[in-house]
Image (spheres, rainbow, N blue to C red):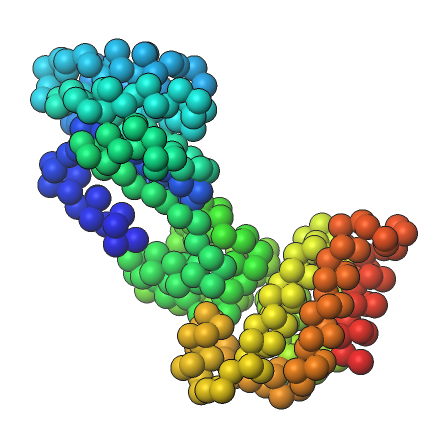
Length: 334
């Protein structure tokens, strides 16, 4: 986020590069930076003649260069944005000659999503030298809750650790999806609010009591009754609670417990750092480690690998998800 802030600040201060290569697996920041350039480099009355949006699937590199070499009309700059530039991956290196000597009055923006330009290519080296390369990397699961907290903080909101964890478990690491849901919450909640699990349940539809977060917590505490209640709910609502996701999250949890058992320093700070979890949840991991000895955890990890295959329909003999989940839970708790 610091790199994004610096880019935005430079654009606001009219410190513009002739070429921006926005690339990487996480499309959210690529879209946001591109939109900011489209909305802020030119005055509204200048955009009609001097701002152009092209799409990689519809143009050639020659088309892009031809447009980039035009002079602006009644303005100091023109902006050429190429969306879905990854569709030009086979010919992108042809842009290297232009990148070596770009038109100073043009701001060329290449939105190269879901992948990156090979850093060994001449075009990458040329853009790196004459312009700006921004690589938007995918966040890990454990990094997203902090991203949610910081994003909300800039808007004057707070969020509880459990609420942010619910969003991650339900929406994954897709920042655009998460941001859309956060914007919905900001519409219905006054500025300064702290977003809670109840707000998530009421406005987004994620159950605060029946989710993978609560299942993990119940299993770790060996609260068999609660765990079976949640599993039954999952079995009755398979579309909202796919087994493959539940198995994956439990696998990650028990893999972390295995790592925890191998640690010499089990202080909360060390555990939070080593397992990459919010300090708020460390006590749950420590309780789970006491309830599940290392040998048992190793066996559970093996069981979860087996059920990961079954959840994908292999060797499951058309067993309903509900029954598979119950069998899995019995083997974990016994």
